[in-house]
Length: 197
Image (cartoon, rainbow, N blue to C red; front, side, top):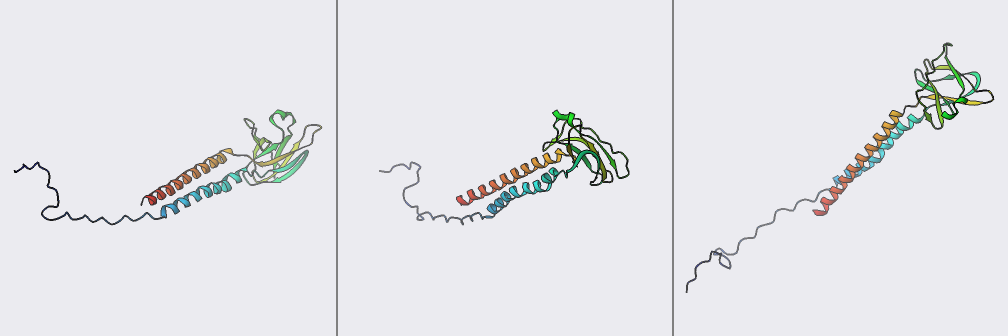
């Protein structure tokens, strides 16, 4: 009895024999270690970069080149950098302003140097900025007199500039964060790709 063809291919090999096996393509090469080395280099830079910024910008900015001057009413000559922004510091807090010495500054020719008051209170390391002035030629004579019954010292040093210091600190943190994250991702992605190869 003849059965109709249901439309399915017959079982068993065709007339030409079994189908030939398809040869597998060449294996993909395993990713190299270059990404890991790049990531390590970025991680090292994430540490070294902020340190360089701190040592070249932040630390020098805190060095205010302060020199102690007795507030004894006598003139004291001080040699400072030319045309620099300097200040007179006192150890008295803003609550003890009545104890602040009275100071005057003259240049090398004897002309009075303007002592400019501050709009607010600026304190650095426990020393309050009393007045600021321009050094001019660099040679100045400072005369400060303590209130009666008190013997104090003042300090003459650079006027603090907090803007560059704060900018350098945040810049160092941002640089370290970007380089560190980039290095970590570079190492991670390379390691994952190598493990799957």
